[in-house]
Amino acid sequence: MYNAHFIYLGSQCHMTGEIFISLPAFYQSTMILDQQSIRLKEYTKFVTHHFQKSGKYINKNVISEIYQLFDGIICYIRSMIVFLSFGWEEH
Image (tube, rainbow, N blue to C red; front, side, top):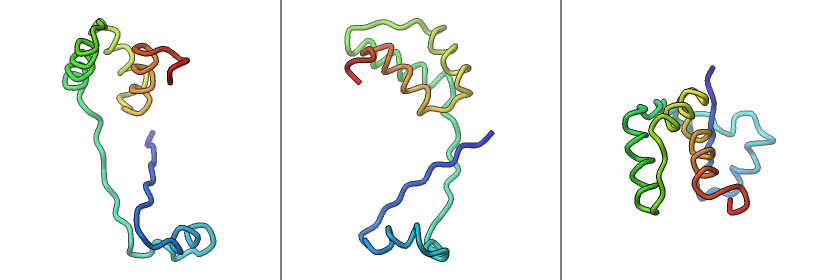
């Protein structure tokens, strides 16, 4: 299963409108970047470092379970990690 993410950047305001009303709006003006998942080992280091930096602790097995649950899709993993770190009300 693949996820598609779109980022619209640029200073041509009229292009934003054309995205939704004109088929050739993106013709030869885009590029595809293949983003690989961050490896579990590196992501675990990143998460534990930031937890420690804020005076908190998270078990590495918890990070691994979350990583596997979301198939390495970082935006979903990050949402869960932020929830565990700060709680629902703050974010």
